Image (cartoon, rainbow, N blue to C red):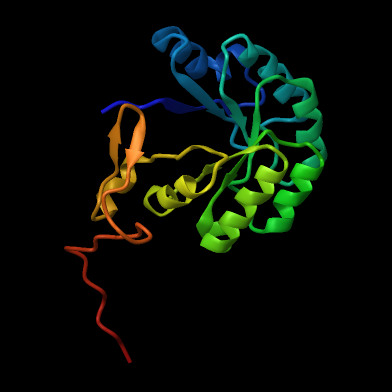
Length: 206
């Protein structure tokens, strides 16, 4: 089993120096070398000026993306940050409609969009966002529910990553198969197989 990327958290300690909040990404790059993607998540924790400072540090370590560095609805702030940084800015897990993604893409406020089918309105809406991103020559990535998203990222030409959360293996009947950094499909259907063995629903009460 091998992974091709890791997401490290670098927020939301706005008052800490960039070297402190970015330590996981910096240490990770020094540990794995250049042939491995390191992605950072700001958790919507920074002001624009602090995000710019951190992005400048991240550039030196060839970081694959800077995810949600600002509040999720700050289109203008993300657009300014995108203009000021060579690190790809990623948004989307906190968006719930096609029009929200349209606003960010039209403003040049992101380089990669991360879409959650459960939040955006289902499989059809996920695919619409992916095709919208393709029209802007941008990459798309999934968020959460990796079994459901695996067929989706395989169905579009502009999907770069599938987010994998190992903790979710405990509640699904089919765990993800990862070989050389790639996921494989070994079952038919949408992938949402939740195992509830051992759980009992409470008896109805009057």
